Length: 283
Image (cartoon, rainbow, N blue to C red; front, top):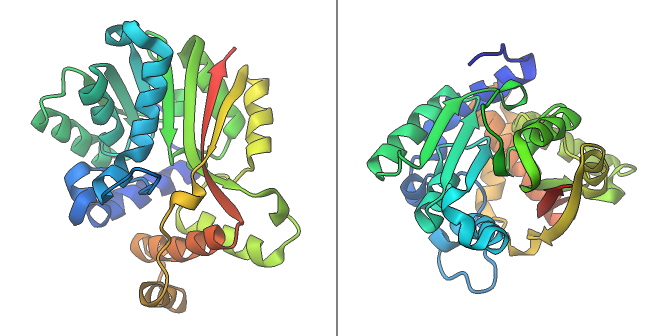
């Protein structure tokens, strides 16, 4: 990694490095490598399809935008995890993808998975701080799936995207966004801050705030898809068990992830957070 990480970036990298084996230990996540949320949209029939739904939406954006030019398309995945989105796009569309992450363990696993899937000629993964990385070429599209919230400086994020993307290219962000009516709600702020602390977030902005920042960097918002109602938020006994994490004085990456789980579920259930896919175009 060329640039030295900030204190916040190092905390994010440590969080993912420490929790890596737990996030992908069992079930369909271990099988697919998908670390983002399952979206049970209409037509989704099983958990793998729910986990792949966000990737499916991205693939559809690419197909509808580039049509016959697909073989020449090169996509940048910002905060690529273990490469699941890149490999899905490469396998479905035959395009080339580059993924970047500040987690050394994720990048090593992503490259191993690409080799095992015989996709290493289409997918490249590198350990980089996105806001300071340099590439010799521009990309046709960038995606950030549940990684945008980790950036402390959204303005710098969009400026870097403008630098790395060619004109008229797309930027797709799928993440949590704060609802407008939370500013004066003390209870919502407590749980949003718990979510932010537990999952090492750098920002939790509203769509309108992000839209204004993006416009200043030369991006226009073309599509805004609300996926919140398609999430299945666990309740009952598992939720009660995870609340015990708040009663334990220890601060570890694992316990913090549990605390973040409790907080984000409460925020989603109460309408303090929305889960959306935003599609921007570089104008």
